[in-house]
Image 1 (cartoon, one colour):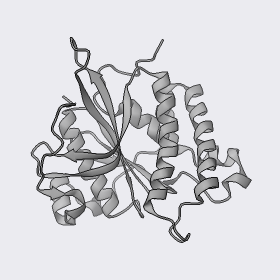
Image 2 (cartoon, one colour):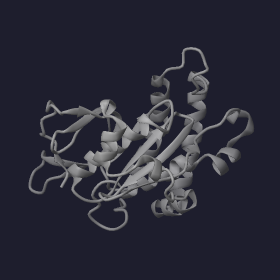
Image 3 (cartoon, helix red, strand yellow):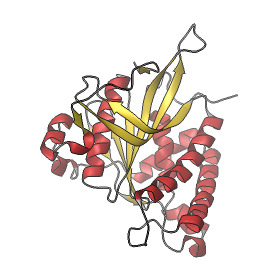
Image 4 (cartoon, helix red, strand yellow):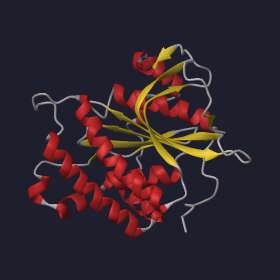
Length: 260
């Protein structure tokens, strides 16, 4: 279960996620992407309800914080679209960090989970056949009984920042999720594909993948149209992140271990 922190990180793997053909990716994942896109999705209404397991007040506070952080991002970097001169993938990474750090900080303050962000994290399949570097990977650090220093970590979620939530970005995300789940050994792992504006969440339980429909985490004129509009129509990114944090990795006990 999980992976030792002492695991060597310089292992060589046969095929990079980004170099894998569609045919090989489908064979590795055990699915057909065209059929997968036609499957029933996880509904955002169900996800909103499940996120409330963390506590209604906590989730509402997260949404208020994330709304403010997105406004800060827009003020200093502008709207994340390629048509804007000078806009790069790094801008999307910045937005993801603005959103992710706010949610994770409040999540950790409310639970006993020791989840951290690892940047440019190398993920390698247990058979070393596939692998790649992922910009954002969240892992749950779990102390080893009888040792103050040793710990294992379980993969929780991965975020893939691309120009489209479809195509190669989703393929790479799902390959990484498969290998993350392989290291965990059980439980669920989650993945997000985002352009900054559009997001999609994917879940993998070891046997099958499911996903949400695409949703928008921000919109033009947010500053002028206001907070209520965003909370009503665009705050699903918070609900999805909360559900991924609650369920991702190997959960020892049902529910959330809240701090006293």
